[in-house]
Image (tube, helix red, strand yellow):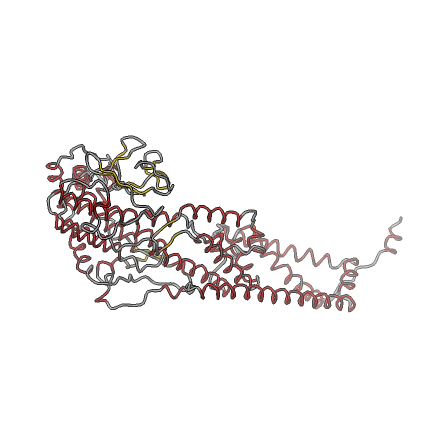
Length: 612
């Protein structure tokens, strides 16, 4: 075919005028700009075009600009082709536009019906379940767990020492709380003492039978001397075999002298300990319950560790009244967390109780306590019910989850904060998706979160009976696994509505275990004090625990696991007292171990070897 024939059969280009060309360019640019932005964000990993405003960010911006300009020019030239022009003329004809408008109207109607139906379904289902829980007396409002203000004269936490724990130190744009106990002599000496020489850590002579032992005060004396000399990085693991009373008494005086610099701060806490209430100045963020900071927890544990060491040293030095005062302050420190209705505060309180009980055990092991002192300790220990105290933190945690769903629905909380995706572009996409989904889906999230929360707690513990049921907790955990079985990111969000449950439900099975362990330690300490009083009165321990009733203890506590009396056996050197432990099986007083550490899930929980 000749050139003339080709030219004759071809459709000539219809070049637009300047005004039409400019308008077309602007339309093309308006369409391509957001597409270029999205592609650049996916490649760079940030929706911010300038990023951190460094050289790398400007390089990415220049590359995106070149691609954008090139794409606009290419598309503009493409629109000059006759075939393209015929396509657009057909696409934007009145008939096509009318059909598109009809389809668009149907799509909008279906979307509106979908959103309306999903909102109604979720709102109705959540309201019915919420009303049922409220009728049962279950608190669902997080505001109900915010402590009411109390006068400073009645508040243990309203003293300068505690207030110093909440001073926030800023560094640039960030701020943090500093543990004010991190620079004293105890902090420097503690890493220098072998682990089995500290406080309540048992000594492992074999992997089956860890043996409780007194605090290695001689090792602490060497550690304090080494720290004072500046040898804080040597970490020699001081350990001593000098357990005779004379060596321990001599070392105790040096330990007490090393602890003297913190005495004024401890006395400040003791002076406030007579106040009946305790509300720490925690800032309750109702727009971000998971961002609430609890800096006092680390400080409380630090105080209790120092009080325990000082009480043990005072016992060895014959300063029994001072040791009792430190034990009582330790117990008060644990009690001060009772108003903190957070699960983490409850767990810290349970851990602090183990620390406080240790110095009681040392006094009993050395027969230091008098009958009057033992009666005072019994009166303090009899007040504790860690099983009943478990209920408020659980309810607070549930209410915080419900509040989180409400904040997500209002846009005050971001969905990527639940997904914890490190990729910022995917996090931004998750936030955008969270704003697009029906509000009723957040109600369904609350419904499923609350149902699964209740499932994990169902029959796990009984506050009135002071019982914990490990078998039921295992069954609940298995039921939870079945509820989550077969899920994937698509079904978790779009069909099952379990995102909150998957992201936020804690390992609840471990919390009753920790609470039960704390209550067992308290009950065993209570019985041990009664046994020591019997020993003081009769020169020997009783053959059975029933002999303690009435005269030495008003009511014999029962094992929180199983509900039976605690196991007791009089031995040649004293007695063996234990709970059947989490496996609900009598292992004859053998402690469960995992390597060279105790295992709370195995074996019996024996007095003198705390189940940690």
